[in-house]
Image (cartoon, rainbow, N blue to C red; front, side, top):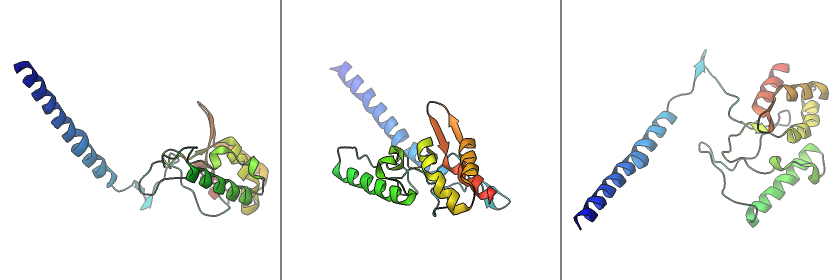
Length: 175
């Protein structure tokens, strides 16, 4: 019985210590760091190509949809067997097909499914290619020039991806 009480007491102490660390200290530290103002250069905010920002307007490339509600990030936890999710994906597919002037079967999967964090700046080369004619038409740039910007923002790793934030910066500079 004494051995059991020693083990139970040790387990309880570990539980309390880890609860304080993971349930209070760590969240408080993350919250504190999140309140630090962003980086600034010459009184202007410095942005990054590591976070996807979906700009308004047809003159820009669009990122993947997001299930996040800012300032938080995160997915919806809905899967392909969820009827609500299927409806949202179908609506997105219709909207994107209309915006890009293509049939719904040409819309890539990443154009209609949300990224896990909602902050991913990358899209597939197929989704970037789908957007080229619209962006070229809206910006007045040639499709060849826009394709060159896409190629410059394409990286190969585990899979080939295109950084939308990087392309939109390049579009801004090219105007």
